[in-house]
Length: 173
Image 1 (cartoon, rainbow, N blue to C red):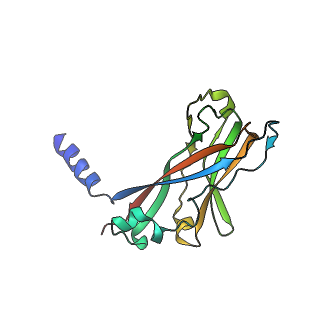
Image 2: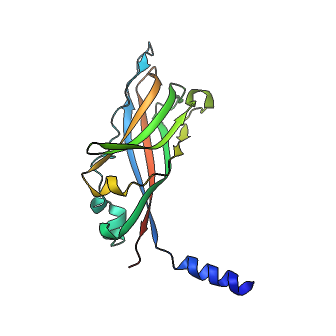
């Protein structure tokens, strides 16, 4: 029994190496005291023009983009940066997508946000991550991570940070 367990652990240790990268960007949702319907979500800065060859986390590990066999999201969250008294009750749902060229796919989403009771200061919402392969989006034309939301405009301008964690699997060197 112990030999079987040892053999299994040895095989697992021989698997392909995995790396992580954390991408962050900010946006501001325009405030409006009348709180009309939120029909668009502003562009998230620093989450555009993404491609494998330009990601610093891969460069620092000397990983060639051709060595990457898989890329998946392992974490997606948004956090209110300001004003400190703002909660996330103005959102009903939020979806994060990746787009490259004419193709896009959902990478994370959350609905029922207004009823979650995420209170200030600086509430953080963790989205439900989808198990989709992102390598085709990051190998071709530059990709963009964008948001789509339903809800109402907040009363005042609200600065939000979006964070997306990527897990890379690489071929053995």
